[in-house]
Amino acid sequence: MRTTRLVVALCCCAALGVAGVTAVAAPPPSQLCGVCGPGTANDAEISGATGQGTLDIYVDEAGDSRWHARVPVTESAAERYRTNATALEAAVDDAWARYHAAAGDVRDVEPTLEGDAVVVNYTVDDVAERGVGDTWLLDYFKTGTSLTRYEIVAERVTIHTPDGTTITNRVSDADVDGNAATWTGDEFDDQTYVTYGSGGVLDTARGYATIGLEIGPTALYHGVSGGIVPGLLIAGTGIAIGRLDWGSAAFDARELERMIVAVGAVGAGGFLVVGAASSGGGFAPGAVALASLGVGYALFGSAARRLGDRFGTREFAGLSVLATMAAVGLTLLLVGPPVYPFPPLFGLATALCLPIGHATERGRTPIGLVVVAALTPIAAVATVAPVSVFGFGPAVFGLLLLPWVVSVAIFGYPLALLGRRLAVDDE
Image (cartoon, rainbow, N blue to C red; front, side, top):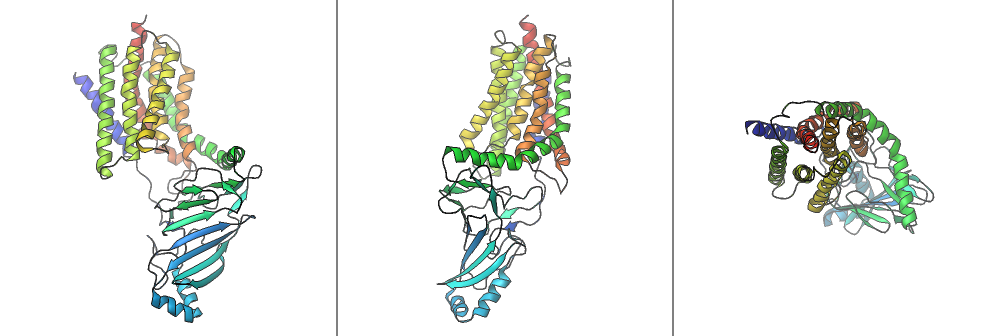
């Protein structure tokens, strides 16, 4: 019983280590609307402004754009600007933020007054380019590996693709209606892509193919560069835990099942409580993803023990995938899309430890299973590429995955023992 408690404690500590990997600090965010301040790193605003206003970005058939910022002002300020064009131009000149999305690309600035609002029109060239077939890709807001982050600083931001076109991809954090993508919240993805064309299933496929061609080479390079070291460590872990005998004589299959279920249940409950406390009572997506892994871990261990006399290594491998999919499904049910890729991918690597242990005990070397487990860090980095840490490349980012590797080893070892016990009991 002491050993069981020790294992549960170690697993909980590993889970906390994974949860404690935090984001790297970034420079001040760039606001989307250059004259709608103030923002986080900007005190400038149009004199007399009564709100942040709105920004509409109109893309033309050539991929260039006109940005239309509209900022409400007081009646007295409006009257001053109406009778003094020089004062209006000076107010707009003073309102430009130091950090804004179109910095360095702004052309043809035209300030005007419409009612009680200052309107600033300016152009930005080459915000979109041709993609696959007749599809176009707006990629102006992709930041690549730079540390640039965006801040909306407007009551609403809308991107309008040319008349007669339809946006064909799912645009992060935006509400899409025909040829318009609108942001009204606080989030704007620093890798935002908008594809558009004539619409329909074919154009949707072309749009995603265009995005794939745009990000594919970078995702592959960053995935391999950032995931190769964690992948090799997981491969070594998979081979080692299938051969280690520590604790194998101390537990039978039923005791291992109880331990795994206890770890999963405690972890799931703990993450939900911590997540609810940190988010003010709601479901925090990250905590829910980790809690779902705990549920999947418990269910997987219980199902594997009960089906052990009927399953072989191949069936246990399939059950590993099913348990991972169940965890993803639970996350989607509780918090909806998108699902952050790290928990399910490293969860799959952990679950594969059971069939690895089962195959090893049967005298086979499960190369295929070890390779699949080793590829999970590469896939994880590729799905969030491009990545960088303080300007360093993906290899340094890969070091942030080491707590995940440790969690695979700690959580995977009881599963490997269970797989070995099931193989012995079935003989």
